[in-house]
Image: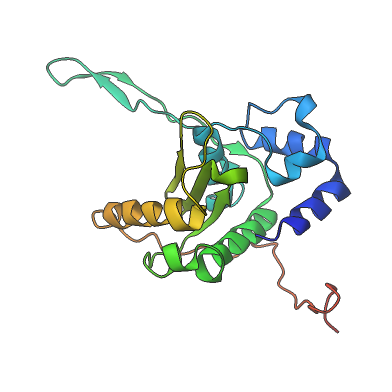
Length: 213
């Protein structure tokens, strides 16, 4: 969660490119007027369902799943009268790029801001990201396994601080872990991810950010 990195990348590609990419991830609330540098730090209100669905791109290694709340409709005799066809997934990233993000988000759980709240208590391979807004008005954690994406948002109806030093890692992430542990008591462990066929691993020199020689 080093915000300066997000700003550097955002300034390199441009604010409009960030907005355009977010729309590919299913974020409908962003307008062209939001294409300002503050967008690099998340200075825009988003719908939790859209943001959670966007993380399915990282879980699926490139494809976004469209949320659908209704699976079927039955009459009073239990007959299925409206079978809902599964909505097609939407290709967003190439698999190698998505895997790189997937591994970075696994790092958040393994040794980053969510290590104590998620990695230490939820043992199934997972990735995710904590989030905390200015003045502690909102806290987030969105995480995923190979077969399930879920998110937790906490905040007030009116934008006021939740509590002193409220953080996603302190409030939202533990709730996510408890929920996921309960779910996977009755669901098989899906295991981890395998590398995309066209992905290449190289060593990086931490002193300069370039490929090691």
